[in-house]
Amino acid sequence: MTSQEHTPIALTVEQRLQIKQAAERLKQKFSGVLNAETIERFMNDSLDQLIEKARLPQWLPLLAERYAGERLRALVRLETLADLTTPAVLFLCVHNAGRSQMAAGWMRRLAGDRIDVFSGGSEPAESLNRGAVEAMAEVGIDITNEMPMPWSDEVVRAADVVITMGCGDACPFYPGKRYIDWDLEDPSGKPVAEIRPIRDEIAQRVRGLMTELGVAPAA
Image (cartoon, rainbow, N blue to C red; front, top):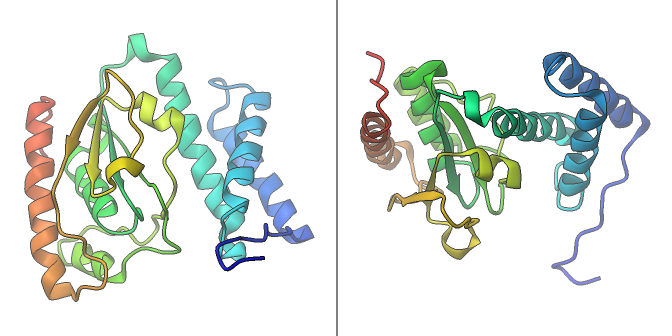
């Protein structure tokens, strides 16, 4: 086996129980909107995708639940498109650990439930950028509960606007979708003092995008 190959993780009995419990939580969350078979299928598929590349097996049940939940949320949006009045924005970068998470954090704070916010990465990191987390905490935005996740077909298709940040050709492209590239410095490896200007530029860009979408930023 070469250094580039990855041995799939064998789930423990406890992890399988956690995944079963996660599926039940998703069934309750989407009860009356999606059927149990669809939720089971998305949960299993999400787990299959993640288990191939996972490097932190202890987080697999939680990550699979989060990933499946985001995909299901996007699926609901796709199936009710005609009745939607809120726009959806997807923030994409390479690792989904810094720029895209800060942008999503800002938009959730400034837009609340008036914009559906998604984020993802082409090569998700193991954890969030600590400096980005600290910089956001300084302005009262807590992103500690977020987890780097891959982008999914459902989420890209459900988004009205896709904001790309440095992922280049690795970012998914769908004809007819509105794409905007934000040329931002990568906060990876930088101290908090150097991340603050990136954080503030992201806030400015998020406010500008919200204005374009006709959603006034919260005070």
